Image (cartoon, rainbow, N blue to C red; front, side, top):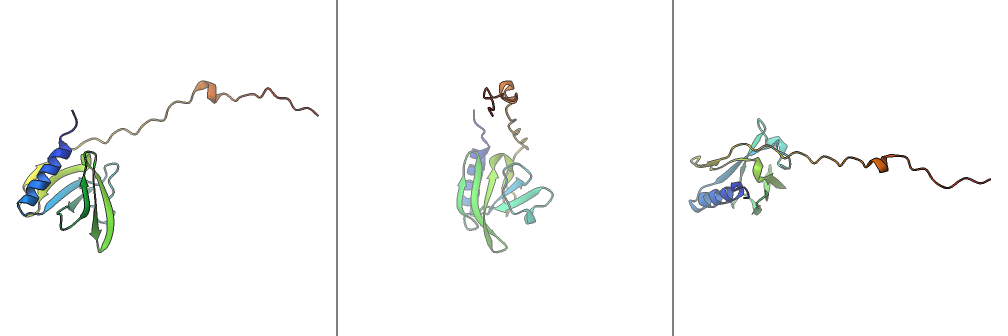
Length: 129
């Protein structure tokens, strides 16, 4: 089965918004694929306000959460893999959901070179003078 984390993030976000509160995401900023303003990262984490009034183009997919926000008046697009989300909660009362840390996926290993390709190929042509 697929991970339930993206579904729980979306449901908690909707629940918080339906109650008129402000949704925040706590994110592991060191997780591969996280694109956030590094100036706002503290102790390897960043807390992002994802309330509808604070962001635009919000898309919470099964693999990543993407949206645009302003930091210091400068607009930027943020990308957060769902496995980088540490918690989703309401700013006003802290209610929400925390998640167990997820190990980053192993980077793909390059395929081993084929032995036939690694040998220097000798030309069958000869230089004639």
